[in-house]
Amino acid sequence: MASNNEKKSLADPILEISAKPNAFVLLNQDVRRKLYELAYGGFIWGNDTNARLYVNSDVYTSYDDFIIQGFVNFVSSNTRAVAEGRDGGIKGFAEAAFTRAGNFTPDLKTDVNSPGFLNLSSMQVVPLVVAALFAAAVEIGLPAQPAAVAGTLRIGNSLASADDACVAEVERLAIAQLVLLGADGWAEACDKARHSAQQNGIRGPARLRR
Image 1: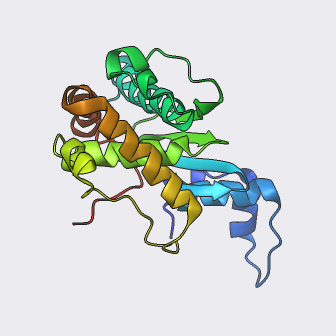
Image 2: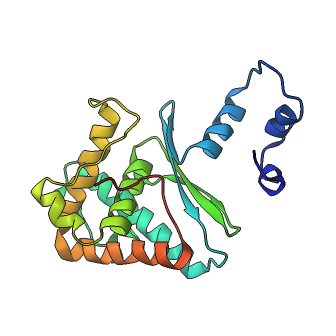
Image 3: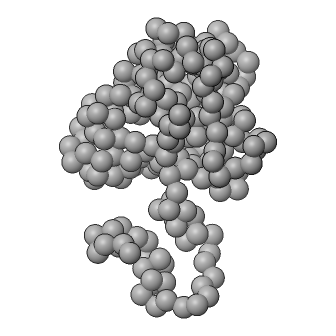
């Protein structure tokens, strides 16, 4: 059951349904999507890919916001380079955070309250690549890069089939970035992701399974 505070954040159509429960309810597309956003940290809606980063700290400054959005831009830019076959286009955090990634840059919806969230959505799989690399940085750290080179780092989805094409593409794009960044390039991005996790309790939908 949602608390009263949680209920206040729900959209009016959802509140109306919860106030008058029926055995069967026909939900329109907008309401169904809002329910998906509430229930899942990452999901695909038609051709739209979504992932949510949760901010669990009571204090969230403009610098903190800059760092996590810089990480998103960093992954977006490098995902575009890999997808377009431009290995030489892979850039470290300081440069990639300010590089335009065109339609590889996800739309951003931010709840500025703390605790809150940053919701990423895109016609590309970038939000899921962001979630995967953020988890790699926070939960594995620097060893994630040599593990990617050695082929011992795997990215999957426990709810998807073994041959799921979307999962395979997310893994390909994420692993390629780690390999091409090298140890030094990954170290800088890893440091920024860990700042966000430690300073603001930011976490994504991806989890480490050893």
